[in-house]
Image (cartoon, rainbow, N blue to C red; front, side, top):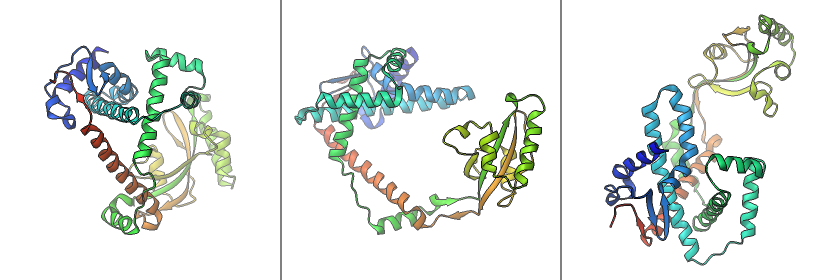
Length: 332
């Protein structure tokens, strides 16, 4: 991962931003990224912490030839990753110096739950850690640290915040455009994948399905029986695409053109593309509108609580930083 090391070196030299002007002129020394009290954060720590996010960005952007955008995204991830690791060490130090104790049995339960949820079993975990060049001990330590950080955050930041009705109403009024939705259509779809059928069969099958639907058979049940859409298998969605907006719909243009020209209850003709054949039924239509406060009150309240929790969290971290020793490579 030499590109990561050289990148982080460049970033530490020029782009630390909120971490302090005195850290801008640093050079990496023996893979050291930062020292927080008695804890050392290495370049490898930052690489491991951000690895999955960076790889996700690479999968998303590099196949599209967006190398410059990937570089910017990677820079942000590395910078934020180092800042998050510094904050984690500040919180862990507070936990340690405050004299708190955490029974190892609790961590055993936390690790077991994480293994079951993300990996399924210990063997899969072991294989995954091997690919990540990570040991089980470091994985367990990461889970322990994350649990402590979460519990300390809950302890120090009020989770039961009250937001007054007046604040909710003011926020809604000032941000009304956030709650504007465009023309919407509620769409159900049947997809016949040409690669799964003999030549000519998808069109014939779709014609037959359409005839049955036009005679009144339940379109959802027909989708259950015939659609090749992968989402059909995730909980009985029965071809349901939900409410989609014309401006940003994931539907193909051919399907979107029908959906937003049709009336509620309309059934499309068979729509054939290079790789598949489609049938679309429009089950609802809504004109563009601003969602009323009564409809979005819960969202507004949740947003305001999140903003306040983040403000309190930043204040808490700032207090921890004032009494901590944080140093970067090259600093005296």
